[in-house]
Amino acid sequence: MKKALVCGAGGFIGSHLVKRLKSEGFWVRGADLKFPEYDKTAADDFVQGDLRDQTVCNKVLDQYFDEVYQLAADMGGAGYIFTGENDANVMHNSSLINLNIVERCVKQKIGRVFYSSSACMYPAYNQEDPDNPKCNEDSAYPAAPDSEYGWEKLFSERLYLAFNRNYGLNVRVARFHNIFGILGTWKGGKEKAPAALCRKVAETEDGGVIEVWGDGKQTRSFLYIDECIDGILRLTRSDWTGPVNIGSEEMVSINQLAEMIIGISGKKISIKNIPGPVGVRGRNSDNKLIEEKINWKPTQPLIEGLKQTYTWINEQVKTSVDTIV
Ligand code: NAD
Image (cartoon, rainbow, N blue to C red; front, side, top):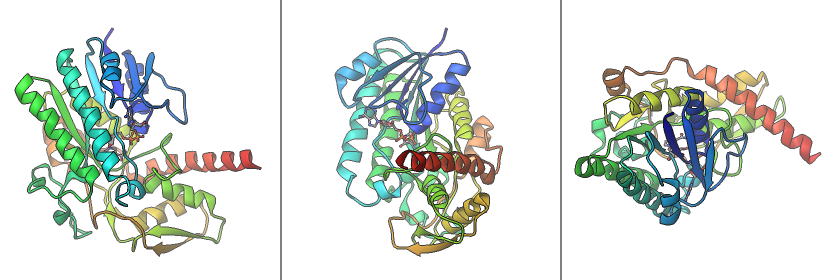
């Protein structure tokens, strides 16, 4: 039986990935500070611990795994990474995790190691025009990410690639572009735009108003979680190292995203744009390279994933209101 380790298995993408690996017949170990918030973990074994701590990493990587997925990171949405308040923690915590894990992977001669970088590593100067952002893989340099979160991602993807060159570690590096879906963080300050907007719409009465950060003209693309898992697995099992974008090319403005969610809700809700942390003006995945190298592209339009996500968050909102009452 093949074995996989998922670091960050208590998080959004990690918990979905564990489920998929189980459905493929893997024996799966998960590792995280916490268990998944909205569902039981599907992992056969779960180490609850701090991956900044080398002794925890030794325990987590105490044996050979065919596949290791490193998704653990100190991260959140714009309200977490763009205010500046969490910069030191984000850089320190995520770097330590990656420094520990990559070294243990070499010691255990791990088969394949997947590392999740982010589109936040792309230079801010290429993302000033909301209608024309540039995020092809080789536009990464000269480096100028818009956040310390992006700088740490750039450092860590280089770290994995250096271990590949110097120690022959079989790494895969993907740059995710805004992954969203059910069973993801939807409140508390670490939620990202699709979940935050679904929550605001779900909490607002027919005829009400929701607040949207920025002028609403900033653009992004969003990829549904199931498609992201397909991309991760296809890349990991390919012979292409990356770094490569995993995202959608269906770019929308944040106000358009809000309008799509309002449409799904069936309510009449208007949008009020207010000042808030927003990041770059425009960002969109460029999938030329991933299509060429591993023949992967998203299969469904944004609206389909939004319908599922809104339905799930609406249920969560109703349940939490019922609990308070
Ligand atoms: P998430 O926050 O839900 O999951 C990250 C997990 O890492 C959390 O469960 C957290 O508890 C765990 N973690 C943090 N510090 C830890 C520590 N010291 N020890 C052990 N576990 C620790 O985030 P996600 O959306 O599932 O993202 C997974 C990965 O993908 C992250 O590396 C993230 O930076 C990257 N990424 C995500 C997106 C996105 O849109 N979701 C976009 C780009 C990149």
